[in-house]
Image (cartoon, rainbow, N blue to C red; front, side, top):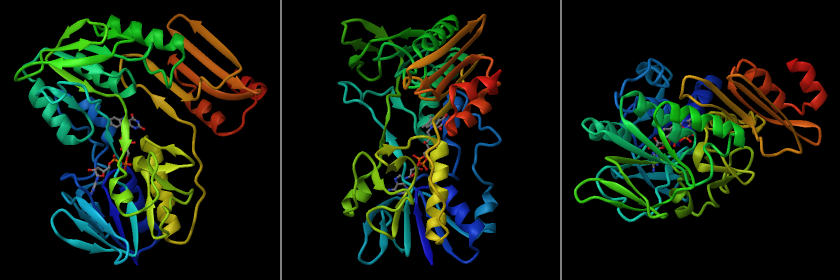
Length: 386
Ligand SMILES: Cc1cc2nc3c(=O)[nH]c(=O)nc-3n(C[C@H](O)[C@H](O)[C@H](O)COP(=O)(O)OP(=O)(O)OC[C@H]3O[C@@H](n4cnc5c(N)ncnc54)[C@H](O)[C@@H]3O)c2cc1C
């Protein structure tokens, strides 16, 4: 059996690795558009300015692919899926046949269609090349403005600040990391960022970007102007559904799959950021890894159950621990504790533990995650954390 995997990030490599661990004969080809070895994408936020690669940056050592008999094709962009002949056409003109096809083509960043967003100095961060282009551009510049006050925006802002840049964060909503943090937790983060010299503007939206040969300022819808040398958009992602929809597969926000990761064609799977499972687009690294594994096992006829773990986030910025898990908005009851530098919030609904925020001391995080994956009652929760 020949399995062709399109994409070469978390979903793709997890799928290839699981296939090989469980079957030594299956033919595996991974074909990705990027030209480097598969790498740990979340690290890119921390490589801004200096470009330094952490020793765990690459997902596998270069010899892994050869040793495991996995054909890795880099710089290969798939342009068409022909379901009748069960083959994929690449931009290079090549065609590769498959018995089973796995779409692990991920997502791209959404950049709002703001006037001036094509002026040099406007970026978003998704690929290694984006990080390199930003680093080349910012070298001799002073001020960076991040549009978007979510996790990624804050991590990028922090890296720029540590490298001595002046940094602004513009957030459309009324608070930072609104998907993960309570109002109080957001306020604490905002104060910490400001303490570090990062300017945070909430409830601000970009009207247009001004500059002749490079970015000079942002005009906000409120009429205010912010001078800046560079802008980085970090406002959300869009699953890559083009290849799938052109091939007639069912798509919605993402490529629609069942819990076994099969698309509307039983020989084609979708995993990771490009997939939509039970109406939900995934968008995080652990779920790309998990869905890659689920697809691989299904291909081998050894199905494993897909369980959507609750989201869990560690903010890798600031010099304080910040952990969020579950959904702190899904509640009818809560326990909120503020003790010195430490903040803790636990939420409950129908007497079941639903979410947590920890700022400062975060050593309870693994217990919390484990409790969220089970239906832990309020009483059980209090017993476990006391
Ligand atoms: C800066 C940054 C920080 C992040 N931080 C975190 C974090 O802290 N925690 C977390 O859980 N998640 C984080 N994420 C999200 C996480 O990286 C993604 O959820 C994960 O990478 C998704 O993996 P994936 O395999 O689905 O696809 P992607 O990582 O999106 O990769 C898809 C790959 O497919 C390739 N491709 C696309 N189209 C084609 C084609 N037609 N032919 C061939 N190849 C193609 C692309 O070039 C790309 O290499 C972060 C993302 C970014 C950008």
